[in-house]
Every structure is written in C-alpha cells, then in structure tokens.
Amino acid sequence: MKSVTVSIDVPQTPEQAYDFLDVMSHHERFTDHYLTGWRYDGPGRGVGSRATVTVALGGVRSDVDIEVVEADPPRRLVERNVSAAGRRLAHGTYTIEALPGGGSRVAFTYAWVRAPLADRLLAPVVRSTMRRANRTVMRRLATELARHGSTGGA
Image (cartoon, rainbow, N blue to C red; front, side, top):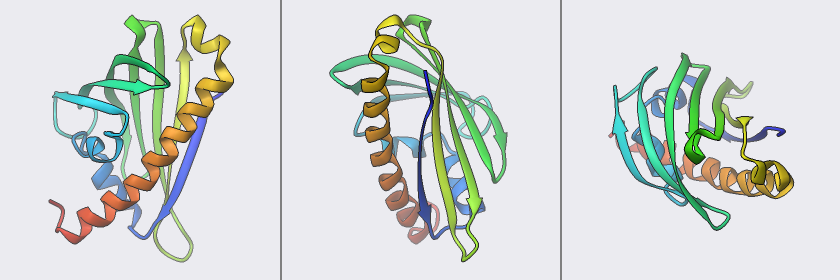
C-alpha cells in the first residue's frame, strides 16, 4: 500500500518540536481523538519507548503496539506499529525541517510494511481515512506545541 504523508508548519524550532515529540506520553495529547487507552512501557523518551493504544478508526477498533525504533535528533523519529494480531506492520515517521523564515515543518508519514487483506482491498478508503485522521493530528500537534511552550515545557 502507498504511504500517507501529512504536514504542518509551526513556529517552534526543530529542536523544540523534536523535544516535544520525543516524549511518548505527549503523543496522547494530540492523537486521543482516535487513539485511546494509552499504556506506556520502557523509557519515557527515545528509542525503546513504547505504548499500547486502542485505535478506533473507520468503524474498527483494535490494539496497536507502538515503539520508537529510530531517533535522529532534531530531525527524525521512527515508530514501529504492530496491530491486527501481527498482520499489520507499519512505520510512522516524523520528520522535522527548519523553515527559511523560522519555525519548522513537521511531517508524519504512515507507511505500511504489511497489511491484512481487507486493508489492501480497501486501500483507497483506508488511506483516505488515515490521511483525514492524521491531518487532525497535525492541527492538534500545533496546538499542543504552542501550549507546551507557553507552560515552560510542562
């Protein structure tokens, strides 16, 4: 299946955006419209930080195991996502680049490595649903980045 990428421009520097995204528990703040029941494991940030969440998207609910598998501060974070009893394997990659006038562009790419037959048969619908959900994620991320900066990193 083709990957889905969404992005947003934010006033924070790449270092500020990366520092926020590097903390696994911060992701709950901007994804809880479709990822709920966050349960954390491993370190709080960086490679090895993990969470198990319940995804409710497109009328389907299932658990997803998320683990940070690569980190390249302040440019890139890669998460491995496993769900559907191991039949779905994907990578979620955040890339952060400085903008010429200041601030950053934060992009998120969801790329399927392996997908169940139903996902493949309904690929256009699945991709559209993921794109819509992740556009909301990006808008909410921008709000949380602003809130995080105004509270001194709390």
